[in-house]
Length: 603
Ligand SMILES: Nc1ncnc2c1ncn2[C@@H]1O[C@H](COP(=O)(O)OP(=O)(O)OP(=O)(O)O)[C@@H](O)[C@H]1O
Ligand SMILES: [Mg+2]
Image (cartoon, rainbow, N blue to C red; front, side, top):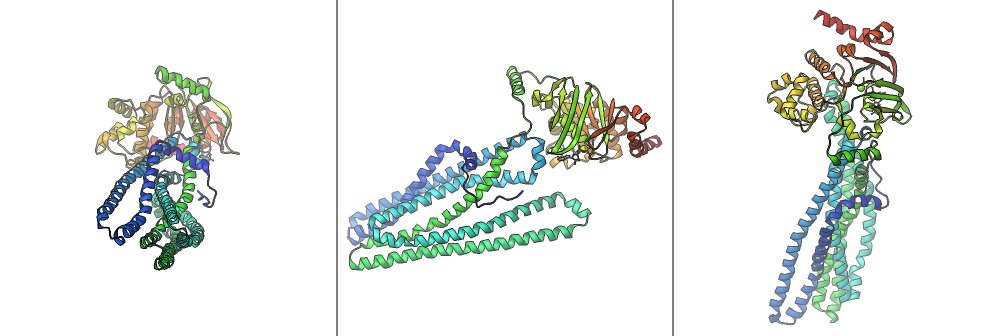
């Protein structure tokens, strides 16, 4: 994913999408601003209080006033301490709250988005949005507000006090603000340029790491470590150079600000000192000006940083809002929504479909213009088994994805029990559907938990029954902790065959009217292969099934076999019919399955 250009105008709409999540904290924000103004006010006032003590207490020789001065200081310090304690807590609360709310919204949206979104958007990109971008935004909104209100208020209040006391001296002291502004703008620009490169490289490095981890095995088997290392080395080097330049530039800015602050202080001393000697300025006022000048520039570096952060954060905000506001391609129509609402209102279960599936002149393209399925028609009677065979890329998975409405046809329609499935609520369709993916995926957790994902209300006994049905029970009880064994992230602690058995158990637990099996090609050992085969024969009974088949027995017993080629049905019929036809299927069969038959006969 390309990094966004940072030098773009402030976009209100983007920020509105994020600030929505600050709304629940309106009151807290109000309080926070109030508290920050108070802290800043006390900060601005304190040099002048010191000046007053010097003039009116010490120089005026009024020891009786000393206790009063002490009380004033004590009140200021205690107030400061209490308010600082409160605002840190409050800003933290706002930050964490927003973090939580935005993250939740993004996660919820991820669950709703259609398959097509994930085709276009890499998981690494989404992960970065969910973690670093959201964190950055919450941070800049909560703490950026704190620093900005404090810095802004303090500088304004201090300048106000200085001008009120002696406008000429204030003008001289604060004249350094002009060069400061010029330097700030210049440095800011250069920094932006640099950090754009840093960020761009950084996101490439993240991607390289993530691919390095996921592809570690492949890299080893290809002995491609050298190539990978060199590519990564170059990236790292670019990153280092850009970062060093950026650091040098930052290292230049801070001393300039500090030096200018001292120049201001010097100017105050020089101009004010002369006036004190001439007797036109009190000693306390001079001290107040000197202290003020020293403090005045404290917030400058903070403000410059916030200014930069807000501009970067705009890119984060755009990406996060882009995720949260992404619209799923596949949503319930208004009629379907009304039907689903009515069902939820009377509390009835999802109606069971009988399972008749019709494809009517269905065409489909993942990428606009590139049709992978052309004018496909098929009428599957309830309770029958359709096997899909054909070479890789011929469109088998595409057909079952369309049947499940993970994608919708680009032309034509699909009917379930005689109704266009776009009129049915998605929840009804998915409540009637069991799907074992070509790459089985399990959630980290135990075997039992994974099976029960099929039907959350199922009892342990029902889960076990389902796994017995698909012949998964035996291998599960052999695991170290039986049904309570962890499966690892994505199921990594189980073999592919075992993962398939668990997914199969998960799919049949819900007793779906329509079952879809997208078998993985030859990723299973012979032993498990036989288990899975028997299991499939059992679970196909009594439901409409689509099986992308690589196993002979499934194909031989299927009610209908579709032989796919280049997104079209090349031949169809039963195993016998197709063999008799002596066409493409026969050839495929001879090439692919004869060996198997021989092996089975010999065994
Ligand atoms: N998410 C996707 N985005 C774009 N094109 C895709 C996507 N998935 C599949 N395709 C393309 O659609 C065509 C059909 O793919 P499909 O996955 O249906 O094949 P298949 O018959 O299931 O193959 P296999 O036996 O290897 O699983 C292929 O040309 C493939 O490149
Ligand atoms: Mg496939």
